[in-house]
Image (cartoon, rainbow, N blue to C red; front, side):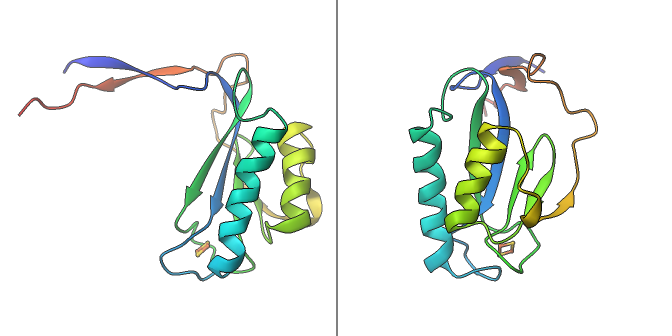
Length: 136
Ligand code: FES
């Protein structure tokens, strides 16, 4: 099998937040709340200079995190910190206190599932090897 290098475009990242938003079946919160939360997350990461560069924060909008209650739901890796009610002031606190300053917002944490082999920011790879696509 041939491998090629897949380079992550924004460089080495320190955290990744996945937010349930704009769902096909909105269960944890209505789209009227989750879509503005997603927009606010993107905007604040940009405004705070966290969207690019070394130790940046990756963000992903996901269709459902299978919690489906008290949303919007988000999870932050590598710590595996799960949050409920992620919009408005809560979202702002998560961005500034956790994503920027490294302190989880305890009042809104409902679970912790850290990655078992979570790399330190110093050892995180910014590129990975992936199989070449099948030419057929
Ligand atoms: S719809 Fe948001 S967690 Fe399932």
